Length: 595
Image 1 (spheres, rainbow, N blue to C red):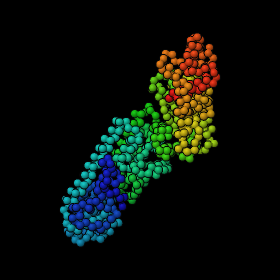
Image 2 (image 1 turned 120 degrees about the horizontal axis):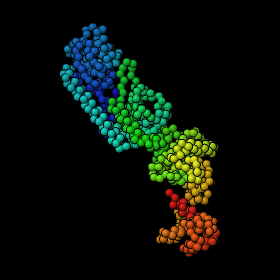
Image 3 (image 1 turned 30 degrees about the horizontal axis):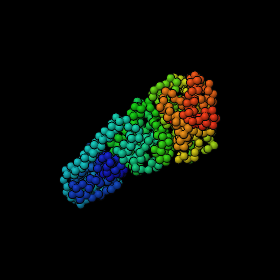
Image 4 (image 1 turned 90 degrees about the horizontal axis):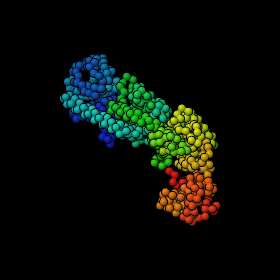
């Protein structure tokens, strides 16, 4: 027998009939419940299991060879006056109807058959799973056909309206440049079914469970996905219950979009030789429109970060600013192929030592340079055979959250990453020196970068601490002239310590106490800037002659400025203790002012 079709009814919040509970055509069971049919006192005498077959049309026939004129899916009405009189003829008549895929046979009693249809007809229909219904009271067939055809046309109009809404919705998304998550969300809302977007490696790029459990939906996704192998670019896989379409454009496919129908995933199997019931046509249209919107969006953003890198950035940013629950970050990272649970996690930040590379100006050049660095970090992670989330996390830094099997692998993994990054950037620098920039301090090779690593942590809930620490170390290391492969907390010295403490109110109070009056003086006399004079004096080890030269001032003028600073601050600048306190305050002020 044919697989059952879900009962009709139900709509989503968008007004579109729910694909999980609706079919385009009414079923035999629904037709038997119509008033014109109930007037005929219907009784099912065979083929009960086929009552949920869809009916695409109603046909009245009084000749035995009607099967040759049918295409399948019809409900045949007859009085039986033209049917064969012998048992073999009746069996052949039922067999022909079943072979062509008729949904059911309704026989009105009173003309040919008085008390009931022949037993041989009922037995043959039951054997073939063909619903056979008696009408025990005379009923005008025209009323039945009118009622059923009105039901079919109404369903088709509903389907047409839903299809129009699908086209309009995805047209709007394309024009608005909606992101991947929004396209997937709309597809799930319009269908009422779970939707998953994956890349060609069967890693999840985005999903919407449509109210179901995300954990159950994504558990073992890669293995499950590889068993879904429909034929063609868009097809329905009956065994798994997933409607699948390929996502790509211009001959370059980069993923698959999958929609599960029915939502329960319980798709009955059809017997050999019987038609297969799949999702409504509008769901095929929906998934293809969603896929084309995703492909178009990717083409529009072809110069921006790759889709995977965007998701990496979303997850890293979520850890840094608490914008998503930690459990959700772990689940999405796992679906992307990056397992963070039960791993030793180390936050890493990579940034250029200078904010602007030599010869580069403007935001576009800065974005290109940051994008090159992000690509280099991602490639270094792959070459070092590490697992990590990697992406730019702000306008200057590229972050990575390394997921290691145990704490013992930390030093080895960081060393391998730093070496791989150096090789990748060196290779890029030989072929793209104008883009990568040249380190003025070294005179050759790619522009110098700082690699900073935070303390390793044992859970995803602590990962933010490691990432923030790595970012602070990278900022502090910019003032360190050493060429270390990796900066850790012990390397950053006093300047690094002050940078880590820059948000501490007590440090800010110390700065104001030591330098506040001088800062107020400079604010009133912007041409003098005595703070720079003090800085030159302290950075030159209180050597006044060297400091005067560094400040491009004559010694008398420099000495006069020092005397003025001493009066303003009410300190003895020749005192080692006072000079040390002022120097620490200057370093703290730089840390507080750092972006």
